[in-house]
Length: 381
Ligand code: CAA
Image (cartoon, rainbow, N blue to C red):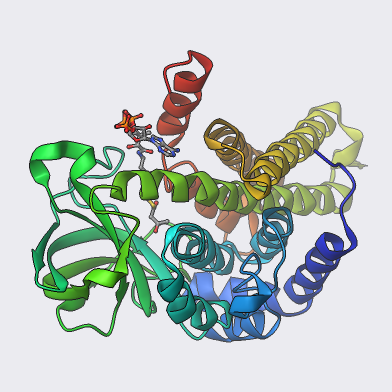
């Protein structure tokens, strides 16, 4: 793995950092307060090419790599974790399976609209009874001539209310268990697609997660990704990349927690001295700084493997696990350093604390990451 970034990677990171510092800060505060989708941020990021970072130029993307992608997501998450996950779910979970696994006509149809940000994407795997146990799909897809007809319910789907395209998983042969699941690229304008509830969440208020209902939703057979029965593998391969995106989001939240704590500890005086003069505070800051850097190195290693086309399940699970736990610990320490002020909405650390928690849950809980890592360490996978 190269520790030195290329000019293109540095350029993408610096552009995202500038945008985040100049524009995203107030949007992040307001989106959290009002639960508003940050449409203007997504529109500006689309113009900057950030909705198609790793999509090749032939499909209208920026033609960069997953290292640049992870660096960009971190910068966005420092100011607005909601904007970050909107971009991450669109890119890793919706654009990538089309780019990496779909047939050429599907790529030509979907990718230019997704790279430009005109069509936002979502990933519809989770169901009321199929969260960690992703193979327990109840949604059915039944072949009818040149189409499949989908019926079922999906839960907690990030970007669902705004999405124009969804990667949907459904059982085509229930008796075959995980080998009976198929994956489809679905246009959300299709009759039978309905957003039935938007969740009222603890954090990432600007990123809307919804329940979906499919009623005789007809999908052309050509929109099948890979073959019938390959859906579980499509989901797992996609999540290998998605977990790098969530790791980057968690690193951004952890970094924001560290930066806010540094500033507060330098400004705040107790017992006649700045907080930074106390070892108890210095050690917290030191531990946060180490963990942020370690998490970034893990994420960039996983991104490098992904760019090489090498298997990265273990490495992306490690990055996601460590980064999510770093985000939660750093946000907790940040609130502690801020004392009573940290528990109020006057300071951003209260938001970081709420936003950090989801990184330990979505795209595979920390327990699932440990299962994936243990499976690889034990040689079972
Ligand atoms: N790549 C390719 N294939 C893979 C794979 C990978 N990373 N991981 C597993 N597979 C294959 C295996 O090789 C195996 O194939 P065969 O049957 O041909 O041998 C098959 O998949 C089954 O594998 P396992 O036996 O390991 O599967 P399992 O059921 O024991 O465990 C799991 C799987 C790791 C627990 C998995 O179910 C999982 O990751 N669960 C979490 C799901 C998840 O992350 N959900 C989040 C949804 S997205 C989201 O959060 C919403 C959002 O909008 C942000």
